[in-house]
Amino acid sequence: MGKSSDIKLITDGKRIDGRKPNELRPVKIKAGVLERADGSAYVEVGGTHAIAAVYGPRTLHPRHLVNAQKAVLRTKYDMAPFSVDDRKRPGPDRRSIEISKVTREALEPVIFLEQYKKTGIDVFIEILQSDGGTRVAGITAASVALADAGIAMRDLVAACAAGKVDDTVVLDLCGKEDNFGQADMPIAYAPNEDKITLLQMDGDFTEEEFETALKYALDGTKRIYELQKKALKERYEKNE
Ligand code: CDP
Image (tube, rainbow, N blue to C red; front, side):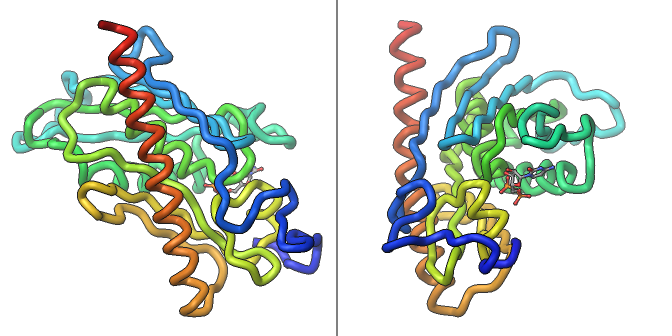
């Protein structure tokens, strides 16, 4: 979060990209985009583009990680070096390790891991283009990729962020809003289960702003959820 005075983010009630406060950027979701993976998905949220690949359930290596009661879910979030203006140094860093962890925790509650004892399920998320909200786009993509891999799930997880810019609560921050805004709260939500599986917060909200941001984010995830289901249906119809 930068200083809000650095750049004017709201003009006449409109945001820098012309959106209303509770408007999502254009969202595109496609299931089944990679041939080699067991399941895959591509997600665009405005200028943020993410791809997810799922491998498994499969034999887990190294063997000491095997759990006799359930599958082990492993997640890897990565930002491509060319995904941001300044080249991102390739390889894991503190941020990507943290995002990989919260992504795993956001997805685990909806997967019937106990149905796949002693196996591993690997989820790879690659951010191809980054303009804010990459962790939530990654979770949205990973969830569709898991379903595309045919893995038994209680629900899909849809994710988006809400935040605050120029003292206004907004949905789905773009990169500039994220950089120069006052707060950013990514949320992952399983609508059928009515379960929030990720809630992080950077910056400050008043209690009232938090309530509005939560409402915006949950509404946003419900819209994304519909597009996730549509993408899976389209994939299924195509293969009939
Ligand atoms: O992407 P997300 O909002 O989930 O995570 P963040 O850590 O709040 O990063 C916000 C944004 O900062 C990213 O989406 C990128 O646009 C930008 N960023 C960057 O330009 N270079 C990095 N090494 C990391 C982030």
